Every structure is written in C-alpha cells, then in structure tokens.
Image (cartoon, rainbow, N blue to C red):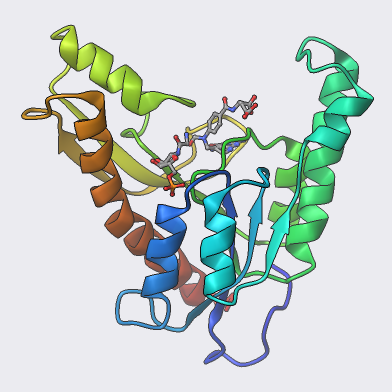
Length: 227
Ligand SMILES: Nc1nc2c(c(=O)[nH]1)N[C@@H](CN(C=O)c1ccc(C(=O)N[C@@H](CCC(=O)O)C(=O)O)cc1)CN2
Ligand SMILES: NCC(=O)N[C@@H]1O[C@H](COP(=O)([O-])[O-])[C@@H](O)[C@H]1O
C-alpha cells in the first residue's frame, strides 16, 4: 500500500466511491473519529454521477469531492458492451479513476453505492499499491449478484420463494460481489408491505454495517502494519 502516513497514530485515510444519495457515506462521515470508527478520516468522495446527492453531503462535511463522469469516454465509443472499443473506453475510465484515487494515498477504498463494475484497469493498480477495496452489497454472499438486488429479493418474497435477504460488506475482486465477505447480516422480509418498506428496512441496517465493516477492514490493515 502507498505510504500514506509515517506514524501509527495517524488516522486511517478513506476514499469513498458513490453514485447516488450517499446515506451510507453519511453514516461513515458521522462515525469517523467516534468509538464506532476511531482514528479515521475520509480524504475524498468520488462520484460517477454529477447529480449524486452524496457529493453535497461531502461538501457540507468539508471533504474533498471529485466528479469522474463516464460521458467523455462514452462519446468516444458507442455504449455497446460487445464493442471492443467500448471496453477500451471503460478501461480508460477505470485507469484514470485509479490514478485519481491513488493520488490521495488512501489506506482503504470504500464503495458505498458505487454503481459501476470496476475492471482490472482499476483493480490492478489499486491492489498493486496494497490498498484494499471494500463494497456494501444488499445481499448475502453468493445469493443475489449485481444491481437491483433489493427488488429481486422483494419479487421473490412476493412469489413466496424467499422469506429473508441480507446485506454484506465484502472485499472487491474482478468477479462482481463474490469477494470475501468481511461482515454480513441476514434481514427478514416478513412484515414488509411494499418494496419501499424493504428498501427502508435494508438501508437502516446498512448504515450500521458499513461502519462496522469499514472498522474491521481498517483493523486488519493495522494488524498487518499497513497503517
Ligand atoms: N469488479 C467489481 N466491481 C464492483 C463490485 C465488485 O464486487 N467487483 N461491486 C460493485 C457494486 N455493485 C454491487 O454491489 C454493482 C454495481 C453495479 C453493477 C452493474 O451492473 N452496473 C452496470 C450499470 C452501470 C451504469 O450504467 O450505471 C455496469 O457497470 O455496466 C453491478 C454490481 C461496485 N463495482
Ligand atoms: N450493488 C450495489 C448496490 O446495490 N448498492 C446499494 O446502493 C445503495 C446506496 O445507497 P446510498 O447512496 O444512500 O448510500 C445501498 O442500498 C447499497 O446497498
């Protein structure tokens, strides 16, 4: 990992990637330097969406922000995932995102509702600097994969094929949502009257789990003498 600080008492440096409202980012902001997440500071919030409310949350908390948009890359190539040129554009986007992140020498990267699949053009340089990447995912490990998991869990509950779902914080690897789990929590869907009910229940649990998972991941770094 990039040498981010030369004394062990230096707070752990966290970079957060978002795409939306940022309620989980807010949970991290609120927890920094409390017993829930001691000796931690968010050094930058990066969003792939300019209108992400999470950018405003970071501004209010006087945290550096960057909007890293995909559009300039899409303009160079049609948005057609089969098109090898589009894959090139995605990789160019990811490579520049990695440079953006590494410039701050974070100790850890947290994906908190970041809705882009990260290619090895991002993963390799960040992992090469020994900086772990963790992600909040609204499903138990190996259950539901990708975007839209809360709705899929709700649809299966309504179809009578599922009673529970869950959330997890996991390490990010190339295979989406299959990285080693750090912490996870099963959540009953029983009693929810609508998808909105389930989303509210899940978000409430997520706000605690993202702080807990980040604290565990930082503690692992400390045990290996990396912060
Ligand atoms: N290589 C990895 N990248 C990411 C992971 C991961 O585990 N490995 N976790 C995600 C977050 N995520 C689920 O937790 C997730 C986010 C988005 C998608 C997805 O299918 N996105 C589409 C649409 C993007 C868009 O156009 O807005 C895409 O990227 O094509 C799946 C999973 C963070 N990244
Ligand atoms: N596959 C990733 C995924 O679905 N992530 C989900 O995005 C939301 C972000 O909310 P927020 O912007 O309010 O923190 C969260 O519910 C998180 O589980």
